[in-house]
Amino acid sequence: MSLLEWVRVAEDAREQQDDERVATGLESLRMAVGELVPLDRVALIAVDSPERARNEIRAACRRLSTRDPWKALAPAVFRDLVEGLISTVFGLGPLEDLIADETVTEIMVNGTDSVYIERDGRLSRASVSFESDEQVRALIDRILGPLGRRVDESSPMASARLPQGHRVNAVLPPLSLNGPLLTIRAFTRRVMTLAELKARGSFDETVEQFLIWAVGSRRSIAVSGGTGSGKTTLLNALSCHISHEERVITIEDAAELKFDEHPHVVRLEARAPNAEGTGEVTIRELVVNALRMRPDRIIVGECRSDEAIDMLQAMKKGH
Image (cartoon, rainbow, N blue to C red; front, side, top):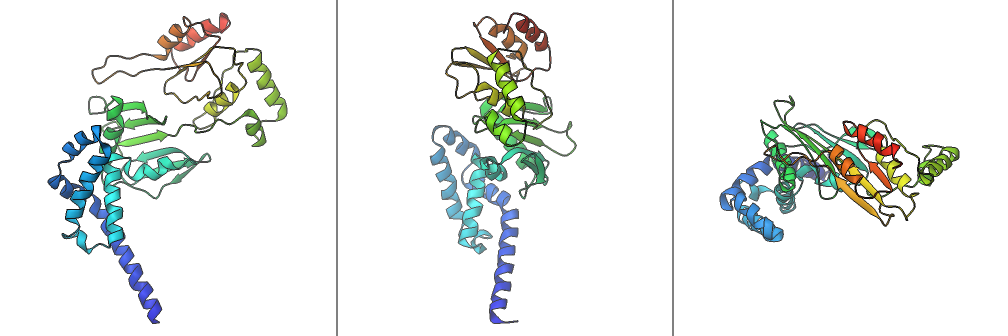
């Protein structure tokens, strides 16, 4: 073996050791930082100054960088470890890059070491994982907490919407036998037009013209299909053909419709019960209320319960 090959083998071995240390050292670093700077205090600081809270953690990590076992890590590896800790404490941890990827439409955390994504309608296993059920649970709490939601043994299921529009669902044991489960549905960042859908082969020109005519003549339209089949995409595309002289009211379980091109859109979103079991507002209540808001069109994003009756009554009145 040549000298260059020996060097490469040594470098590969060093990188593998560093990867193993990063994989096992994040939780240890979190605990060590917590001893220097209590993370509950950092959380309080983050409410008023997120950057100051991050600097507190970075300062604690600098102190730890001269101690075992972290001083044995290469500086670049330790920096990655620190940024990973900050993402875990303040962000979405291992899911941060997946959330930022616009091609990923769904993220499914099936326990600690099983994370799947949907891209272009196909499921594939992601390369990321969690260190423990506690890390997944902490992420769920961090997502739901600012939204006024929580999950525990008495209420082990919850659905919510992130500020950027992503839809979130969480399920905890004992309902889940695989540990804490988390599903994140990415919202549509850009509205596709009917012309684009036709170009992609979703339908031909005859169907495109029929849909444009149906919207323009104010026909009642029901869009149905399986998960990820493109229901919201089609609704957004249809919205581009609604007259700008009409008042549109959208009602959704979790707001996903965009309707950015229309100047007069009122958006309503249902609300789940709070931690005390009160404050729920159903889609049916919103549909009934929307009839009193002088709508030209009512668009209901989810219709799977009692609101179907009110939908039929609204259609009979011409909405």
